[in-house]
Image (cartoon, rainbow, N blue to C red; front, side, top):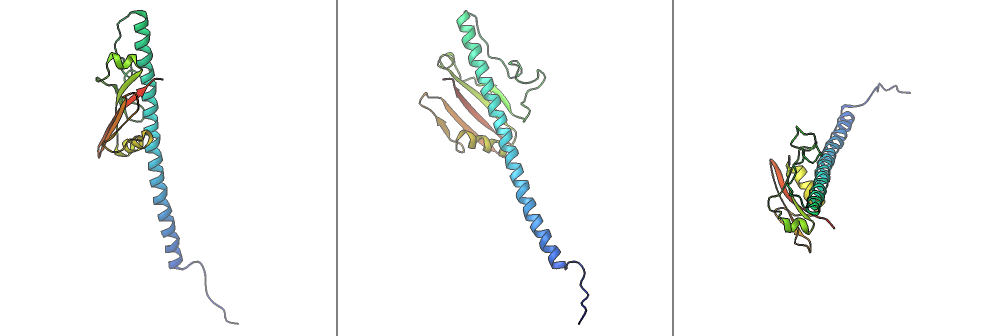
Length: 162
């Protein structure tokens, strides 16, 4: 009987294992990045919905009481800390100047959302069903649009209270 002197793994086997681990790691990092972008986009859109409800209800409450109404800021509405200007995910949400009182009476609130990265902007576009540099509108004439670039993006978000 011939005795062979094998111990451990060959270099080729080790390189094969390292290559597989590398490919799986790259896929995992890409998936994590996409999931975080989608999370931040959902967080910004959720905050925008809450802010739109605050604006809508504040306007109608003031109108019903015969008071004058002024639009709150995101911090003034109590949704973020008073010293902050952005959401925890880095988005900036402001009440759109193009929304007039007839829109508010009809339940339409337009918000401007500035998103921190292109990935978050594209994820928000996907969630809202808006194509690049195009807009979507419902039967109410309420139009949302988006524009993404390398340094972030901007979405005009149209909220319709039903």
